[in-house]
Amino acid sequence: MVLSTLGALILWFGWYGFNGGSVGSLANGGAQTLGRSMITTTLSAASGGLAVYGVETYITGVRDLPPLLNGLLAGLVSITGSADIVETWAAIIIGLVGAVIYSCGSRIVVAKLLDDPLDAFALHGLCGFWGIMAVGIFAKGPDPDPVGLFYGGVSQLGVQLLGALVIAMWSSGTSYVCFYLIDFCVGLRVPLKDEKVRLDEERSDS
Image (cartoon, rainbow, N blue to C red; front, side, top):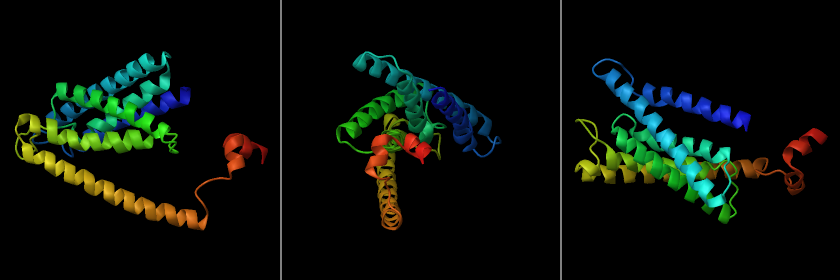
């Protein structure tokens, strides 16, 4: 848990460079955009972390750290596409919705017995899709920046949906080819007996 927490905090800190660095320049209003990106990134991450922690504590009755950490990441992923073009209140909503999407997605993956121990699909897949769509809902100009549905920009939502579908198709197609080739050449999984023993113990014994 110590290493997991440290990793999540390092990711959170690095996300400021990720979102803020996308501004590219501090000239011509870049400093103001950078500041907005930092604030919205913080608010979305915090709201996402607290929301997932609260939901999981209510459902399971157990106060645990992983839900808080995954909620932080859900908020960060959700705000990445719109950090520089949304208001602070919208950043909080984006983080909260991302938290709900992550919680539901994670439970669906477990219920379907899919092998995703890092919750990558729920965090980066579903929250990433939501982050793309959030631009089409909450983006607030000024021109030439996009204008979201909340401010009357209906067309931008369609643009975001098209982009999300193209990304999903490209990622799924290339991933399938890569994983198929890996499975054909060396295999994707370790033997079942190693899985049952646990990889750490199997490696240490060998």
